[in-house]
Amino acid sequence: MADISLQGLVKAFEQDKNILDGLSFEVLEGERVGILGKNGAGKTTVFKLINGELEPDEGIISISSGKRVGLISQIPVYPKDYTTEDVLRCAHLRLDEISARMKELEKEMAGGADDKLLAEYDSLMASFEAYGGYDADTDINKVAAGLEISDEMRAQLFDSLSGGEKTRVNLARLILEKTDILLLDEPTNHLDLRATEWLEEYLLRFKGTVLVISHDRFFLDRTVNRVIEIVNGRAEFYSGNYSFYVVEKQRRFDEQLKRYEQEQKEIKRLTEAANRLQQWGTGNERLMKKSFAIRSRIERMDKTERPDMERGLKARFVEKRFQGDEVLVIKGLSKGYGDRELFAGVDLLVQGGERIALIGDNGTGKSTFLKLIMGEEEPDKGYIKRGPSVRAAYLPQVIKFRNPALSMLDLLIYEDNLTPQSARNRLGAFKFTGEDVFKPVCALSGGEQSRLRLCSLMKDDINLLILDEPTNHLDILSREWIEEALEDYEGALLFVSHDRYFINRFASRVWELRDGQIFDYKGSFEEYKQFKANTARFTEIKRKAAQKEEKPKRKPKPRDTGKLLARLEREIEELEKKLKDYDSEVEKYSTDYEKLLEIGAARERAEAELNALYEKWGELSG
Image (cartoon, rainbow, N blue to C red; front, top):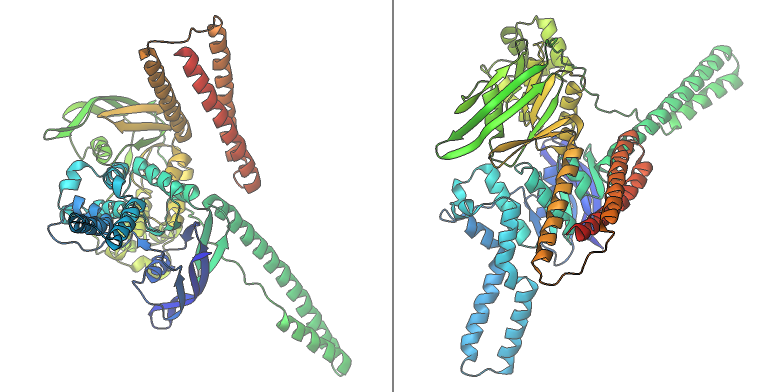
């Protein structure tokens, strides 16, 4: 049964320019669908049409009867005196109404109840329970904790929150409403890694229907099982997650290009034949008729359009030759503001060519740490020392230009001292071409400004590149462009990011900023996650073992416990090695979707077996 049906939607905001041009698709009950498309393709417009915020120029929108739709991109206006807590509790207005009516009935029934009052009361009680009335407070606390809405934030006036905080609170309210159909427009934009992972787990358990617009490729891989891409105002369908979409889109492109080239080859052959017959057929009616027939055949052919795919950047960083091993030496570094200490006693060493991801919850001080390295702020204690030949470049989270009224071309000519032709060449490498180079910098989107800043950084022969949320608010194509620009860079790279796809691609070392300390993990992001998962397992095993020790009666251990433990530890070690081999195979077969499914299933079996061994190890060692 379809929860959502769109048929022949047409929508235009400018005369003679349809952003949607006959868009049609259906979403079945319980499906999780990712909506993809370039910026300006009409993704958010589709959500607003489904939600009733906009009306289509043509077409039909059908929502399954009785289903409630919730849209996260729109933040409602609340009374000025509403706190965050009041907004969260708006999700339970229906419960409040039921509870108020139940109290009225209780008063009426105090003097004696008739069957009609009892029947209404029983019906209300059943509804109260069905909507989770007895767990309402618990649900609010769980969702608020998952999305990192602190007790202090819950007490604040909602109007005093930042835009990102309001989006988080609105997402929490939408989840608490237990909406049947969730429309999520960039839900992870203002979430850190922990909150994003919490949202993923929630969506995996959610029983309703989900449509999500997101540029977070890792998030899409985990949460959607189908992709709809909006191309030229119409829908193209892919029956898998984001990784499947990437492989399948390339396959379709290659297939269409091959078909196009074969058709062009055949058209060329037929055209040459028709031309020859025309030349030979002067005064020969039969040959002229054959020539005409061939030309008619060419005109009647179903011709394949030449496929078009956005090409990547031609830009590459040119890094300065590095002398020596030490890029950065950090000793006893401490920083705080007022009574709040962000971190203290940090000791770290960065060597040439390392690629380090700095991760942590929002507000822990990641951006401050980068500013200390760049000398934009001073530490309270300790020092940061750069190697003598280190030359650093910095891409901040908030991009600012000294002269935003300048055009892009003038910016590179006057601020970066390039010739007009060199400036045009560099801008072209970053996909700024034609008349676009004369646009003033202040008129560019956030993604375009990030791209322009990277373009400007490439003038330097740098060997230490520092990036603060380089992919934030960028669409998928822009993220891929930036990644391509960084791919061949061989200098040291230090970056803050919540984009797990980006972290996976570049990090060979992870710094986790937590509890005022930086925990240093030597290895990839996948290895870091595996280490964290193993640590959590062992912590749980120790907790269970400690609980068993508190019990007065315990079964005696068998005499050969030591041998059993040794055997289990060997098996655990072998399985952990096998999991690493599977990870290597994933990289090897990254474009073979069937092989990836096979590897994924085998990896899940191995993980289940490893968890069982951890449990046995815990029981014996406890």
